[in-house]
Image (cartoon, rainbow, N blue to C red):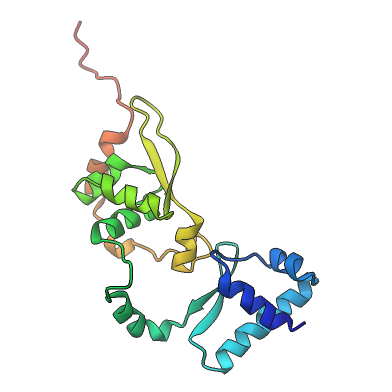
Length: 192
């Protein structure tokens, strides 16, 4: 059996990143041989100027397109056959990715427009999921990103997201946005 070809075939049809341990089990090969096959596949793709690269993402291995081919992929993405997220969905996704866990009303406040439909779209596509409930009255549903989100962006973890330092509003604006979501403090002006 050609282990490199077998790994390539599995990764080609896989719908999500495949952990090396799973490849080892499926191919009935020791982990060292799977690691070697992954390395050889990465080298083979590079040496043949393939349109694909092998990367580790979200706890497994996956085939991705080469970054330098992005202009062609961008043109394809603009074609009628490609499915794209709306600007509203992309904005909502960015808010959740950087602020999670976050409620719908927090996303709406940050974006300045209702985000319910965008969040539903992202949840339906598997990029977001309900990760909890906010404490306190109302108990708002909290959203977070999924492993599919990491996979689609080619990230191993959320810590690989690019920093937002240049795009963060001043502290007083952040304070004003977060104030409504903090538990109420008792008023010093108590009248009976």
